Image 1: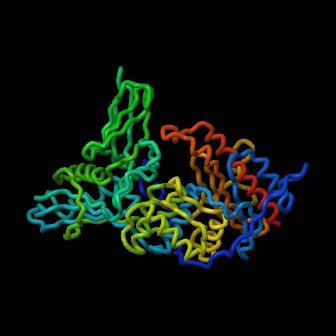
Image 2: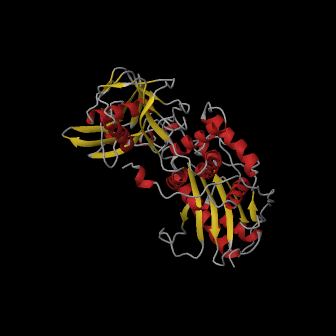
Image 3: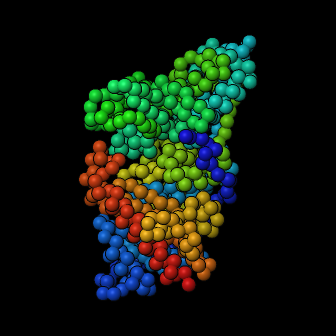
Amino acid sequence: MISRRHFLSTALAGLTAAPALANAPGYTPRPKARGLSPYTPGADGLDAILRGAGLSGQSTCVVANARTGQVLESVEGDALLPPASVAKVLTALYALDSLGAGYRFRTRLMATGPLKNGIIQGDLVLVGGADPTLDTDGLADLAGQMKTAGVRGVTGRLLIWEDMLPYIRSIDPDQPDHIGYSPSVSGIALNFNRVHFEWKRAGNNWAITMDARTQKYRPDVYTSKMAVARRDLPVYSYENKAGIDHWTVASGALGNGGARWLPVRNPALYAGDVFQTLARANGIALPSPKTTATLPGGTVVAQIQSAPLPDLLRAMLKYSNNLMAEMIGMTASLQRGARPSSLKSSGQRMSDWARSALGMQHCKMVDHSGLGEESRLSANDMVRALLASRRTGALKPLLKPYYFNDAKGRPIKTHPVKIAAKTGTLNFVSGLGGFINTPDGGELVFAIFSADQRARAKISRAERERPRGGRSWNTRAKKLQQNLLDRWGQVYGS
């Protein structure tokens, strides 16, 4: 179920740019001597953990004293690796500095002509304001406001304007078409640009629904269509036909029933489709939606707004929502200058800001979510950003608690070392960055990045959802992270 209230939390303080960390030294670990403990101070103890991880590829890490900025340990701190969703920390800082903590996204309905006898003499325009949390409940609110204003119909068209941000077909084009975490991006998004596909066995066939459900509503969707194909593979196929998302699903994969969210590739028409249905439920007859590249002038008939920006950022970091990161990040870039032409150009603008505002020396972002294949960060730069954010106090409350696990994989919530961090996971990529509060009252900042880029390069597009060996590699990477955090908490926590 998708609802703004389902995940948005309380408002937090704003952020301004802060001084950067000086260059952090690194070293080459010495070969591990027999009998060394992971808690041995110095390079040997750290090397014991890295050698014992059994992790292919490259691993880098940096830990520093949060109060002084002194680097306590570093392994290949300047090496550039994919950051995965740890990059969303940088996006949060960029957005707060660019937009301010009080920023709210708006979605409006505009009439291009006057209202006479309940009929708008002209077009009705649904104006996308880049709100990444707009859902079906929000569109229902707009339809209700329109009814209260006395609107019963229009003489002209129902237009959808999405050009506040550029249209991006998929956050990462290398992902399979059916992956819900890589939907399209534009200046309007509904339900995170995902449609709910559900199927139930009905004799020798299946009953299928495609809807835009929330906790309150389940309107059917006509801009996304599904057909069952008598095959085993591929599980899904996709084709765009005149603005309609046409899907097929393999009958051999359906079983007796189930559901999943599929990405939307025509976000403006999807939003217009659902709004037309909700308006009809309020007794307002509207024509079929059409997109417009030009925002016409007019009078605001109804509008809604998002929660304040820090609430959205907290949710973005907690749920690692890629669409939220991209829409918020591109809006921040728009606030700083011309409308970005692509995710890559907006990512470059954020990288330039990171160098000037945070002192990050090697930042190279091609998007704001970390999903893009070519994004790179170093552990040293991540620590610089964390130290800068600590001086303002805005970031740490946005991060969720990170727990050590016991032998059965259960979180140890009573552990004396407290961590607030952001995780990041891609195929054969794992990252973690954040803050450590030690038992003696000290505070550390850290970044850990691991990647096996050779293994990643061998994955075909069809295998990206579940590549062979990916899960076990990721399990070892997370174990390495826990061992490093345990070491740092004990070695530097007393």
